[in-house]
Image 1: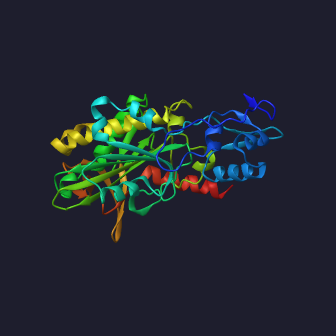
Image 2 (image 1 turned 180 degrees about the horizontal axis):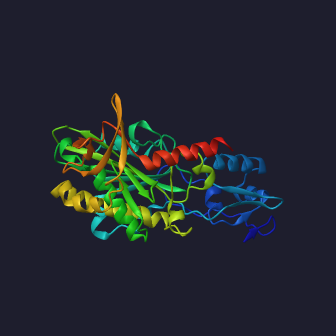
Image 3 (image 1 turned 30 degrees about the vertical axis):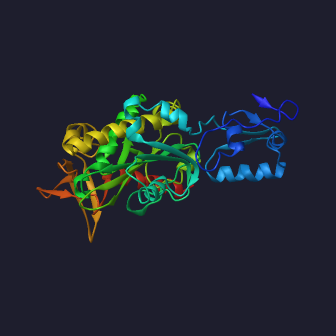
Length: 360
């Protein structure tokens, strides 16, 4: 549907319920994928056409694929679904809502995990979840940044309290990965696997990541902040900035990716379920399920950490979630805090991709 100067009513943009700063009205207007002329957008939002153009450029910088249709106006490549608290809550199993706690959705924030860390240091034992459309300082493991285009993925964190000490939470990132795989299966995505210690992969490419941060008393009680990022529809231009083989749900579902709100609710629901089990029974309750989704088992991998880099063959995980690696006929247990692990096939694929980009 095309909007013109004459038929575009000067009406408010659709409301999107969030906490914190409100969703910019221009994004909500464009979200449906309809075509709008610059003058129509200006009239609808009570600004100048120059202001509309400036905001469009800013949205493009954030990764939103706004197209300029020559002589006609602006539209998105495809409709996007903005995050909404009520829609997310509806997708959470009723028996898990209390364990998830209050859900905050922000338009822009430094990091969902950083927000929960601030909350954890100043609050009671309440559980809490946080999501954001834009993270200015989203981060992954070992200090790496996590980039997600506006509307193209899910960035969420869950705060959970534990009565035990931090050492008892070994393997928690693997448990969170299992929760994500369950949620993806609920959404009809069957191809997801887990790459130790914190990646969700599909067909050998990264689909998402997990970052667990602990706080509190080392001997207990303590808390965990489980950060999860998932690629929903990244787009080619944003994907070109990623320095490793990647995929998204759009590619895995023939461009029929599940609803962002329903998927976020499913992830929070499955995560609450998994954390309840983990608190009661530890990692042992998940060992066989992790083995069924282990993307590294039996593969030659590169271990890079400390002062050396060496190759070995992945051989599953221990009861505390450490990686078992066969090195020169001897099994070695590798802890996630010590090393970086790369599948040798993906190392080769990354080098090929980098050469292709450099040759363009």
